Image 1 (tube, rainbow, N blue to C red):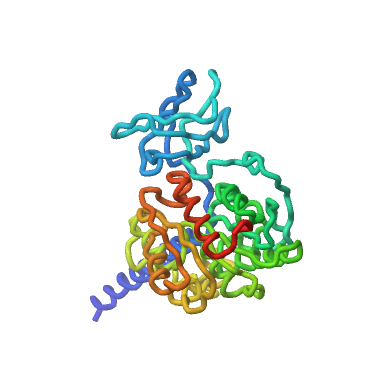
Image 2: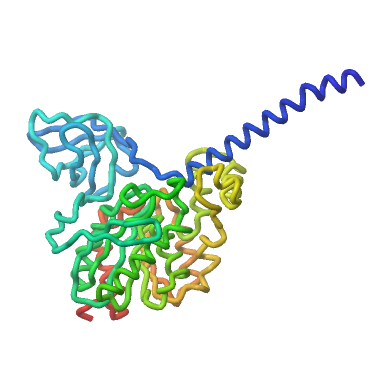
Length: 384
């Protein structure tokens, strides 16, 4: 009996410690899910040739991609544009610089590769203006690009991104005569911060997009098309099924969209070598009010309500999905599942190689033609 009590005295603290460790890990993973990301270093600048105007980067799945991209740097230049891959070996890639770097400029080694390309609306050489949209979270800044049509496109950027992400789509939509409203939403670094400053993965952000729809309707729009990038796809889908203005939503364009968060988070957990059952436990923690707040969220998040494959029957408007087969961040599986569930609504041309939200960069012509063809076929273009 004495030895049993001794064993119990040793075992109980060990079990409590194990439980505390597991809880710490679960809340840590959950917090990462809802905490807005800040841009980090994902490549290094190995050399800059100011005579030839070329730059050498460490080789990654992104930096080796053909096409036009951007690079966030520190030093003299904050952001530079990159052109074609000129050469590559097993560890480095040499690309053409599209932003001229002068001799003597200081460019630090750490950098972040980007699909944004454009860094400001003025670079599009189109008429535009700054506007403020009054939303439930507070005033959200937006860019408005006028057009001839009474159907407006409201663009919604992705997780950890800003409105700049959406600028690539403005020219093709403008050419179709569609006004563009490029919006921000709570906790994205431009719009107001919620109490906890955490993402709700679309569960609350859709209300800010709904406010943007109301703004468009007050300013001459009769209908709207929502275009969502990555998490902006999840936000747009939630708007489409929850908005009080959903009868004015006539279409969705989804670029590399999150259609079902469970699929995405399990995929990203595997990449980060976060072992089961931690991802599912973290999602369960986010679904309950107390543990959601302990995880840093404002409120509980229902992953069932965010699963738009399961809710496909609630969708009622044409949808264009642009998703690269080898996205590498948001797997294409749920997009394909939504297409299979609603072939009557979903158009999904095939793209590959381009990775996440970089189809425009890799294949601008194919990407633009997919959008233009979809708009024309449904009579959305002003010229149709």
